[in-house]
Length: 121
Image (tube, one colour):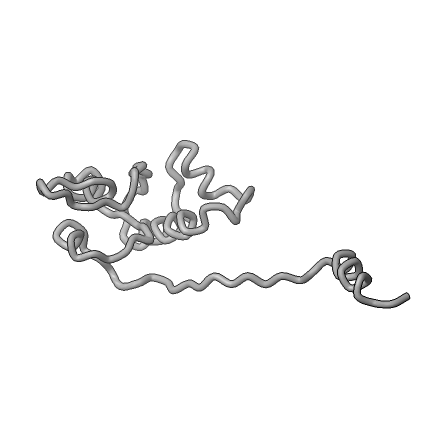
C-alpha cells in the first residue's frame, strides 16, 4: 500500500473505527492511493470547502479553484460533471457505480410484542 501522508485526515480515512462514516471520502481516498502507486505521485490531502463553482466574474471556488491555481494536480472526488467545470477539470470516466440499499431484520422481541397485541390468549 502507498505510504500515507502524515496528519490526522489520513489517519481518519484509514481508521477501522467508524468505518461506516464518510464512505464516499474513504472510497475516493482509496482510489487516490491506488492511482498514486500506478502513476508514481505523492498523496497530499488538501482540504476544500466544496467541489466548486464558477462565479459570474470568472473566479472559482472549492476544488475548482485548487485545480485552476495549480495548488493541486489531481483531485479524486465524487463530484458531478458540470459543463462550467470542464475548462478547469478534465474528468475521467466513472470509476465506480454505487447503489444504496437498506435491509432490516426485526428484532425477535419487538416482533413478539407487536404481534401479541393482535392475538388472543
